[in-house]
Image (cartoon, rainbow, N blue to C red; front, side):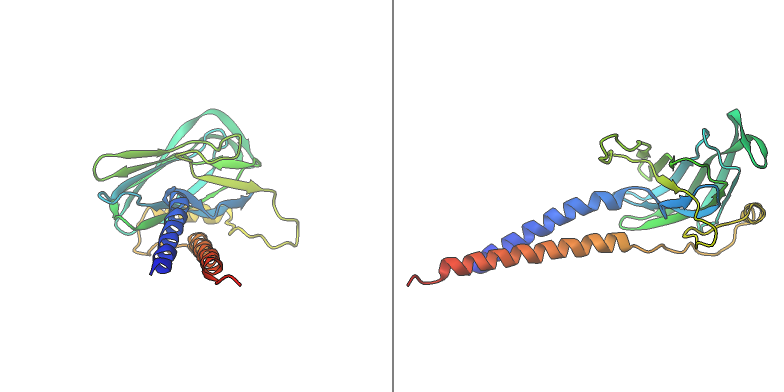
Length: 245
């Protein structure tokens, strides 16, 4: 019985440690996929999990970059949510292959719906043309039914560690060479403009949930850690109980 108690205690401690390490990563507002090609168009989803047990998420406000503005932005309707796309004048005109860009989307707000505890929702956006920079930040405010507002707006730290409230970050990589297969869904300017017009008339098309393979990998890794620790304990206890010659 003493052996069983010790093994159970170790397993519980290892499980708690694994959960503590994994949960903070699940709670962040992120952008999926996290990588796109420079100079192209892409479709992304802002993945918003509810990290409160006693309140629902009721509003999401995403700010778009003005230093590297996006000429084409359209949104996919989300059943139960209303969306407002705000355009504003840029601090200075930005030259693009389509001419000088003086105004661009500065903010997109979804509200009226509800993300309950233990759930998440994805808000899809088609956008371009992506600039030739390393990354784009999309500071996001998450409002809860109790009035709390969580500001996901912190930039990555210089030492590589993650801040407490990181902003959704889209990493940009050089475009694939001619003949190579692009990994990011591309959209032409004409298609993006048509999509923007279509978004004005909300449909009932549900938002497809993206794969949660990142969470599965973390949980499998945690399970492996627990099994390994239990094996070590069993081996150690077996050696201590072996009768001496």
